[in-house]
Image (cartoon, rainbow over all chains, first blue to last red):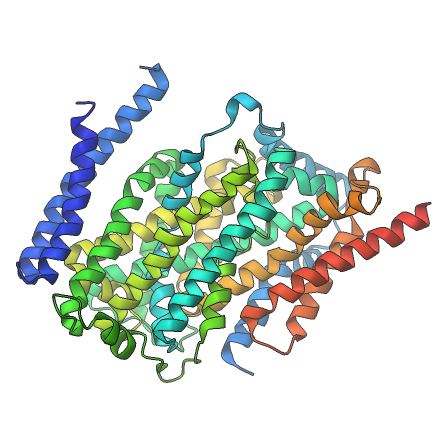
Amino acid sequence: MKILIPLLTVLSLVACLGTGIAHFQGRVTFNAYTTAFILFSVVYFVSATVWSEMRKKKERTGR
Amino acid sequence: MEHGSLLAILLTYFGYCFPAVSLYFIGPMPSSTLSQIVSKMDQLYEFDREAVKPASLHSGSKFAGVFAGEHVAATEFVIGAFFVLHGVGVVDLLVGLAVGNLLAVLSWAFLCAPIAVRTRLTLYWYLRRIAGPGLTLIYNIANAVMYCILAGAMISVSSTAIGLGFGIPVPPLDSVFPTSVGWVILTFLIGAGFTTLAILGFERLSRFASVCSPWIFAVFVTGAIAVLPGLGVEQDLSNLWEIAKTRIWNGIPNPGQEKFGMWHILFFAWFANLAMHVGLSDLALFRYAKKWTYGFYSAFGMYPGHMLAWICSGVMVAAADRVMDPGLMAYRAAGLVGVTAVLLAGWTTANPTLYRAGLALQIATPNWPRWKVTLIAGATTTVLACFPVFFLKLLDYVAIYGLVLMPIGAVVFAEHWILPWLGITQYQAEKKRWFLNWNAAIVWVGTLVVCYFMPFHLYFRWLPGYFIALISYVVLQRVADSKRG
């Protein structure tokens, strides 16, 4: 979990960027791009919030 | 008189004369009341009264993170777009942003950070030693009013996002007053929502803001990339420069907008955070720095933050038919995600601004609980947000904000470096227990009066004003020192 959550956070953010690039390259339509952007954003917010809580817990307990 | 100048006068006097107006209407306060207020003010800032201990110092990466997170705000959607509407050319934009942001970084590194690591104090406590508690009080109130207007602009920006869903039109560029009942109701509701959330919990929201900021940055970049095909950019980017020159930053201002050149952009990028670097508000941040060179970490906020975000919002507004409607331009660039980003950027940046405004206002309301002060700050901010002038004239407001607080930065800089170098006694206000250092007050007011009458653009006035403040304070202190023998 210590590695998975930060990795998921970073990857989802990169995927958000990737959707825009894919649309620019004409690989996906605007609707597909915005839908994928929403999905990756949800993944980002969930994982980033969990990561933030993990860091806060680590700061509190020192572990 | 140009519109921007008129706004400049109104805002300057609104922010600056507030204490004077209250004195006029309420009458001179008894000295016991003033002492109570000063004592209350000291209690509020008690937690940072002591200089920072070596064990509490932070690493450089923390500063990089703070700067990267703080400088992608709702206002970035408006600023970059306004550069396009003001008809700046692409070369002027890039050179102006690169040099202006560099000057901002150097201001943090050479003006703010060295004083911070030598004193390890916030501006509040350091100014108190230099200018006395009276002037610190006035500075705080001026700052609170400025914060309320800034938070109001952020609420207005968020309103454009929600208004899109309800078909509420964004007021036209020359609007001062609200143009529809729908806009007032919407802004009022959003302001009330932001205020309620700020009252419920500042810290939890701050954590949420730190989660949001990388994502908001991603929305800027992704949105700008996604609208490039609509502007006619080829997939191999072969005509990117041509499109940038002819369809985005084409050098033609929108009707009614002033033409901007390289110097406007350069100065804007430099003074966008003037109160923080030259004005020395960021002493509060850099007092935790191990070395003064940590000031260079501000580049993480200026380049990936300001520079890139302003470029991206410029691209987005060009794709949205050059209409100043942050909600619409984000929607066209990134759909619902874009709209959410505008709303969240407004919320997460209005929240700490409301908090700071509340903290600054708390000095004038002894014994009031925190929630009540935040409520007053929030209500004031919400009313201001209903007036579209504050977000539609955001560039001018940012200039005024920095200009009003800049002379205090010059006074502190002179007191810290120049007075000991010239053998003039430092910290007279503290040593003699003055309530107000009149020399500092005269320099503050005098510099603003001189700046007001300067015969050039508002954006360029702060720089000569800074040197006027610096020199006049040194001269006044020298005269006072020789009179004292």
